[in-house]
Length: 141
Image (cartoon, rainbow, N blue to C red; front, top):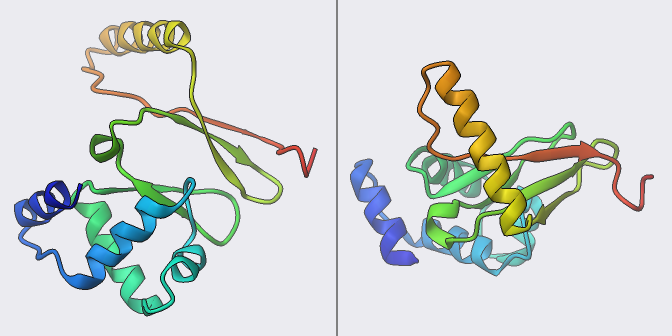
């Protein structure tokens, strides 16, 4: 994982600093998409301003994905290309929680085919997809 992140950073003319390595390790240790305050809880030695800067650079080079919700905090996770874990998200529009969800292979294939057909009808090549389901979590429902 760290070698892949280092390569992505090199391709963007960035170095894989100790701070970036610690942010990646915190994301790797998390159970799902996390906010910056949660990253700071996972590694208390990180400075908040450093986490902001490092996440921005890691997102820029494709190592991190940002999930925007309605609340004040975006969530961050390692990019699927690094984890080989294709999944989607359940986003609560009340509390802003984000949970990972995996679809069955059959449903994933059906969605993929439909999205590729849609892309073709617009003369657009689809390379992948993300699906966010927005609603209310069990606690807020």
